[in-house]
Length: 338
Ligand code: CA
Image (cartoon, rainbow, N blue to C red; front, side, top):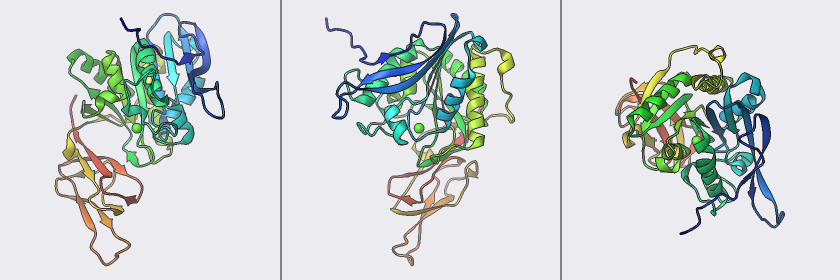
């Protein structure tokens, strides 16, 4: 019988110990500059007794900062006395990408959220994915993977759930999504590639998970950060790790949306300079011009029009002006009730 596959990553923290622990996941990486060195992926474990476990991560994409800041703040605010149970924080999940401020790792050029379940004997990013799916996620009763639009996209700040088949699991995901209390929240039905994400990993392990798209543009706004901090705090209340008195009330009701198939997405038809014609949150209709692509090298040429393929609400837009054929310019959501 083959040996079970095991991670090579060594945690400096003891997940079973009470109190607050800070340390690193040691991912051994032998390079020219550091023959016996490791990549230090920071981790925080706060535990008080035998209650439920929450696992929150950010920096899955290194250029998405709202979640990283929210978890840095949470790591300092949470104390064992405040909680019953355990909170595991992994604020810079793809640490090399987070240090570089890039979506993908500069070491192996891999996108962590496209390589789950990973490989314990694979490249750096594949080893991180394996560790998250097979060591961290199984400890959790609830998980949140905090994303935003990163360098190239901007979102209407949202929480999201990727719904899969099991009805009871869906009910628990939607309850967590509502508890996050973001101004917008949306669901997707497991789309192409969904299995290769951290959320896919949570589904494989039967753990309730939600995600976020908190903003983006490669920056942090005070509004997006407030939404992130309220959301993670309320999730801890939702599972009973924090008392009800720590819940932060929403300032507005959540607008629920659904993101469906290819017609929700609008792409650049020709390379050029993108002029958006609509704003985030705006209601648009099928055939409406969402933007134009201009050709400064041929300024007398008419711009190419970008039209929406269905009705919806603008949930996400591209940020950089310069664009190539195949870039995503917008995606829509449609009102949903759940
Ligand atoms: Ca992301």
